[in-house]
Amino acid sequence: MPRYLTLHTLACLTRQGAEELAARLCAATDVAVRRVLVNLTEGKMLVEVEAAAREPLEAWLRAEGMHYDWLLRIEYELREGRLVASD
Image 1 (cartoon, rainbow, N blue to C red):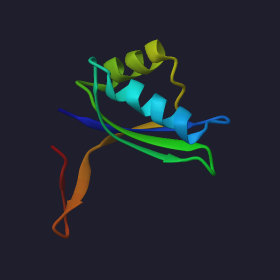
Image 2 (cartoon, rainbow, N blue to C red; image 1 turned 90 degrees about the vertical axis):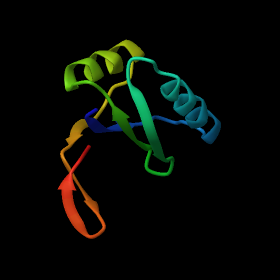
Image 3 (cartoon, rainbow, N blue to C red; image 1 turned 30 degrees about the vertical axis):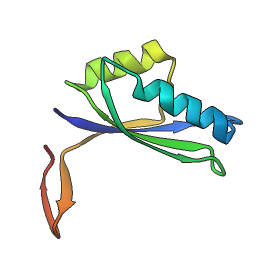
Image 4 (cartoon, one colour; image 1 turned 120 degrees about the horizontal axis):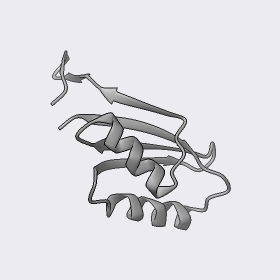
């Protein structure tokens, strides 16, 4: 299934708030959230998601009320020193 990265700006979120938000995202059934990375100092959150396509992912983000700064489909990644097509 295609993987995507989304970047979100967080406003005045505590560590506990970020943990609750990450738990809410991971509970999704329409998409599969694989990783949530948070920097509270800069107010940013990076989310790695598996979704059937970009459109369903965008629809899920809208339904969750999650504004994103950008959304990127992962096409290639570095594995064992080589750039290979992402699964």
